[in-house]
Amino acid sequence: MSQEPTTGDFARFFKPGRVHRQLYTDPAIFELEMERIFSAAWIYVGHESQVKKPGDYFSSLIGRRPVVMTRDTDGTVRVIHNQCAHRGALVVATEHGNAPEFTCCYHGWTYHLDGRLKAVPLNHGYPRDFDLSNPKMAMQPIARVTNYRGFVFASLASDGPSLEESLGHMTTSLDDMIDRAPDGEIEAAGGVFKHAYDGNWKVYFENLCDAAHPLFAHRSSIEASQAQSDDVHSDGSGEIAIRQMRQNGAPYSFWESQVGIWTYPNGHSYLGDYHDDSKLVAALKDPVFRDYIAALEKKKGKAETKRILEVRRWNSNIYPNVSLMSQFQQLRVVHPIAVNRTVVHTYNFRLKGAPEQMFRNTISFANIVNGTGSLVLTDDLEIYNRIDMGLSSEGAEWLQIGRGYQSDLPDQHGGRKGVNSTSEVYIRNMLDAWQGYMSNGHAAPVRAAS
Amino acid sequence: MAKKRKPKTSLPSPRRSAPPRSRATRATPLSLDLHRCEQFLQQEARLLDEGKFGDWLALFTADAWYWVPSEPGQDNPHDTVSLIYDDRRLLETRVRRLASPRMYSQEPRSRTSRMVGSVTIEDTDRTGVTLRSKFLMIEYRRNSQRLFGGTALHRLVMAGGAIRIAWKRVDLVNCDAPLDGITQPF
Image (tube, rainbow over all chains, first blue to last red; front, top):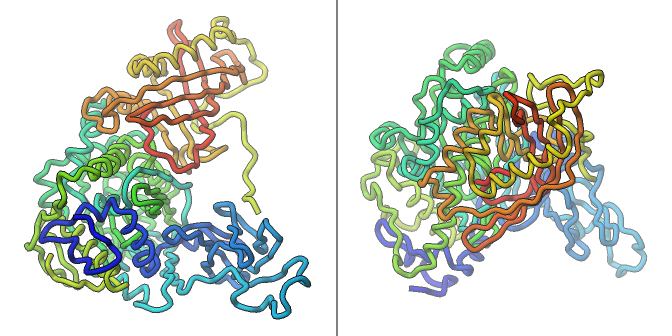
């Protein structure tokens, strides 16, 4: 089967517990995804702490469209297209910084921080109706921008469900990120990883809650860490890395029964926590974590602290472009580049009011879990590459996504929970959203087959 | 409009216990003259090219660290993420994994070819020397070739009559670029 993707019913790419491989290989489908998913859905752009002061800016992408998040003089966080209204050139060429205004390098058109045109050199030569205040003569604002407790999302669609409606129960994962800060505030800090692979963007999301792969795919690092002597010198960072890698070696029985996988409307999902090493970064016997709990209890009280620490999630995936690890202060943004090329940016957050060593532990954790040279992530990147190479074969036309099929359990917050932690319910759930966006321009499921 | 960055320091101090540098004690250990240092770096590069990672590990001191920053001019490996930051314990684990037949990101294996040059002694005292060198590394794996280049800093000390690496920092020219997975030490 290889069909013209722009017409007809997208349901033809699905069978019970199966998806057609064309979804991951067809450039025409990728183009449509950019149009129908990334131009409609709420896309995570950045965190407001990346633009702390008026004039601060941060360049990002919505799908493949360059945008700039700015802090305006009145303190408002805005997201505008990074494009000059004159000849269409990229205006902001650096990743982040501070500027009193934006100036296009071509003819010097200059814009206010909110994108309105401020001045044009040689302006007498333009047509008589040329007007600086014409809203079309601007770095165009993104249709809808919503700041959810510091997390800035934008949608290119002028109407549709609000961000909160779209997130639903997943707001609790964003809340968890912030609630863990004793002072109730977080800030992006510690740099960024940008890792890349030759494969489709969906493949990345379809691995993040996959509890069946670590024991096999990561066994080189599991075995190397298990064989490591703890008597060898460590400044603390290696110890964190090695404990994390050993934890990936939890037996299948543990992965299967102890973790949990939850999914929610619009493609969102999260995997429960799988850490039972009492000395891991976020574990009670870690002395830094104990100091942190004391700081949390002082600000929030014992009951609220207990509630916060009982929220234990591994990856929370907010479809289609952001995944966060609230327990470990990590956030990953997926940038689709081409049907077979993806770049993922990983950020870290500092919990304000927490011991400084806590943030350093976050950095050590990031290096081993999300680092470009990580002993773990490099095997995931290899898998994404191999999926792309393998998909060019026509041998297996229909890919299996059927683990746990038709055995999902209802969730009290309107979602469905996998019958066990290795269920592929979260992949089917994302593909339901995919089908909704591609067919109707919104994520509402068009079938209830899975 | 470019973001202002703190001026680069030529020498890193990522570690709280970094050896003090004193201008008063500039005597280079006799065995660590420039020629010998250059030979050492060539030998190190050769071990890596030949995939003798265990022998490479043996060049490091018992409390060494190996660091590949993610940002140009990065101050330290504790407050900012790094492409690689291994203390001795993690470096051992990294090298053990490199020998594993189950390291799928090395199936097939990479082949590398390194050029090391422009070696200068940046600092010297009674315990050792700090070297600065330039390198190029070609990595070939599965139909594609990548080119890495940059500056390496080595802290070399004498231990038990042999030269050992107390720390090594590798600044890639493109450290802040989107990069496919890195498995080969530089």
